[in-house]
Length: 327
Ligand code: F6P
Picture 1 (cartoon, rainbow, N blue to C red):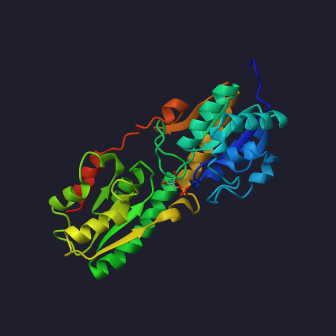
Picture 2: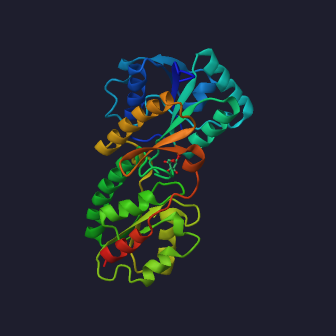
Picture 3: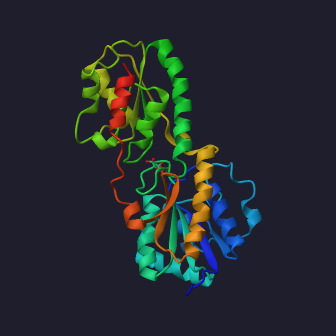
């Protein structure tokens, strides 16, 4: 090996996701196991610019695998989007002797990482940490499974009151521009339908739903709606429904940030641990500027450019499954 990594910087950035702590633990312990020093960077790129950097030992990551959130804190840094900000970040890396970075986050995190790596010739490895599951090249992102389970737990509870009052509920879930949380939580909670961003410009999903015999044989209904500026999310659809179909007794629940919290599921802990180990393995193997993913249960290396491409396909045949199962 020509260039040996002696010290890594580790940060979490963007929206937090359950399982980030399990990933922090795995990266830290694998690095130390391989005689690589770890510098923890607090508050993502913002902290890298502001020099919020401390030495991490293996005990710093004890007792965190089960905790939601991120012990490193997180932020969305505007300054890192500027060359001046990135210059400061680079100088702090040099000051602390950091010769590679492991960044845990979503597409914003990797977009920043890709530019930073190119400008300053820094090896960077990314771990996919976002509840949205919107990164290409991995079957699941860290936090997605926990968020799904949080959603279905909430929907199960809402179903009790929906059915007692014979109401139609629009339940809004997160996902930014992706419908993975909406579609799969709808399947797992036995909802009537999912309204997803991927179809927004193609059809009027609410209209199709009603035309397809929506709620004919039921005394209550649950529709999972992905957050969206185009449809107006659950509130927007409910508003339409009240005007176009006043016969329905409509209610709205916006699940919001409850979806980002909580103890990670076993699945998220396992993928976070495997990906964390793989990140250090990749650095020692002189890989750079890639995201670690898991596809068909195998670790894969995905170039940042591919990971952040805006085209992770939602399996739209599952909308058909949902339709069949909702009769
Ligand atoms: O990317 C994760 C996510 O939770 C999205 O689903 C959501 O649109 C966004 O972050 C919310 O961000 P914030 O917590 O900054 O309001």
